[in-house]
Image (tube, helix red, strand yellow):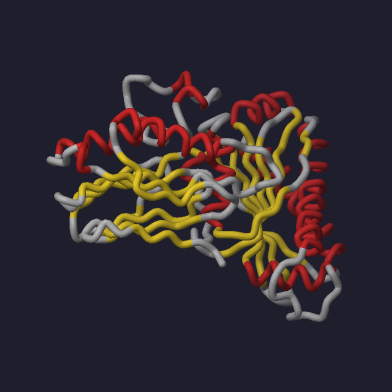
Length: 156
Length: 191
């Protein structure tokens, strides 16, 4: 089954499913994979942390995870993978996205998404084995849960 | 509120299509959607996420915060570039800095005309800022705008206008996002 992960959503899947996210700009796709179990997850997060969103912060319940935030999304996919038998020491992470599509505007949001993910994954003891981040180019990503191979598409 | 905004939006779109017709020397018609309140992360105009488009983004400031995004599919972009830079039709195969600059100017003209009507009718100061250009996947361009907007607010009044260049049937889209609370305050004052 091919599962498209929309903005702000997370999905966990097992071999032989594929996970994908299309047209990633400053959003960040966070992929976690346990190669021993052939269990994977993809989070399509928008913003670094809840406190960065000044306008909407007060309306969110801080006790409920909101997977549009990088840190909450990582918590959510990690919890789901561990509950399905994954071991933290086996999980590998890949990061895709965090661009700034309109480079004439100084915007750090893409970069902040990447830094937040790196910090959070380090704290959780998850190693990052690949990344395609930053720049001013859009990306699409396909993740084969059976092989663990992540394919990143860019425009030429 | 929606009806009033719909009426003003229609007038603004017609005014803008007239300016566009004058600029490129070909008739341009418009299809105007009704202004809708949407959760910004659920925005999904009818263009494929991986379709290559030219995007001109103009942040909006003044009495209301928001974003204006002008989208031209690849074919429209190349045809428009030929028209704007006065090349024989079918010449443009890739974009030069001059093409990008001309397309940004189209963004300025469209938003300028649109906001003149919108600002006058709403008696509000609506300022379009300097345009920025990207030629990439539509999904990634929209994604960037959504993220920028989502930093400020979750919900927006969304206005979509489709431009149709009559002789070629090529289309372009104009997407406007206004912060919901601010536009409500302005509309309340105008009614």
